[in-house]
Image (cartoon, rainbow over all chains, first blue to last red; front, side, top):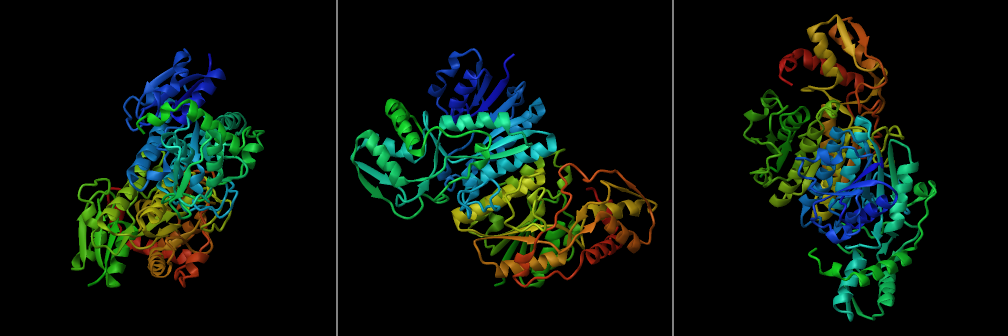
Length: 320
Length: 320
């Protein structure tokens, strides 16, 4: 019998891509999503396959949750409030959808006898990192966003379940990810703006912010390599690419790909929003030592994303 | 008008001592406690003073909570599930009473316009520390207990509120604290056992675990020094004493003070319980640089505690 993977947030950007990849790799996949931000169309391919099962469930609803994890070999817990920007407008959201939801997943796993969890954390967890590129054992950081704080809380819970209940975990600290089905972040915002009006582009900050982007299929490669090869009880692994780009670089690549020359209006300042980190650049020696290397550069990833968005402009129209 | 301090967990061990000290120092004090583990007798002195006001309130109950923080100059948030040992039996308790309760305090402060918070964190947050004595900027630790994980989550939330909402914070990472009104931990357990039967002492682990203890009045001195002198937005400060003792040392000091010679039965192993850290020894350069120094040694603190427990054996009889 094929091994069963449970993917929370299965209708999200990374989750839906992961479902497709796991199905191709010979897993049975049980996807869980509450469709708050997930897109049913992202599962168009998965739902045609008999090895895929969809559960519409909110992770904050503990009723019946345990049963969704029964039989799972590995849980890929990707469901989250993934938008760092609105933390200060809705502070409880990160607590509930990240910290408490993750706790509910861990409890449901414990009660249903499943003990392997891969988790999508974030490079935001390093706050204003003093060491760049930032390694996994960087000096104990001070949090700068409610999003980072909520992911830090999740990491702590997962590690404690490993120590207390014999779980095994793979915690991935992501830089920004982009690629097919990418639906939020500055490349999305820029493409959406230019889709509506190709003559003007409004940019938060002064455009000098450095960013590091990983292509979603490279990200999934890394996750699959790590769960196969990293065998500590708690495996904490940065995922990113070497090097960074400036927001101004990404604007140039996007505009070239779209063939537009908008007037660019900068809001000013060195940060896009309260809690934004001016630079997330992660040291990736740990994942590279497992034999992984990204296939696409930052520029290639951005161009690939722009092409996806052009070919799927329906994503701009969805209720966000 | 005297400045107003709000103390959550005001009927607890450290909280009640802090209330007395703040009242002596000229503060008005509004104490909050749900009396789940707090002792009304610990407030016997405070409640006689007009500058003290008691609110019986559970921090998980958001209804009416904001009002309890109105007018506060500084919030001393000490309310917590403070017992690391039972984490794996009741995993939700640390999440609720530490993480969610702290979130509720931060939200109530934000809504009522109060922005200074002193918080009792823990040296358990360093997990199995690779650097000993452990400084505040030790390598990013992996959590080993649900208790440590929940306090880590609180620290992250507090720091994020400082960044996002202009709060100022003093986060204290404690070693074990003892002294007057100490009511849990191994010295308490040993004294309670010997109070019931002075001929036998059962000890978890093999007695070789190293521990570091700070006397509660020294702890409060440090808190008051820090909130006066440490002026970063987020001040993270270890509190402890130099040096450590072994559990066997503490047994010897306790037995000498009590004048008993029990037969000692060790359960074995190098850890007392799942998630226990064999050694918490914190570097205290940061608080010492502010001019603070502890007055009592570990041995003196333990002896002082044994004397308190002997003179107040009613604490052994309370429902825990």
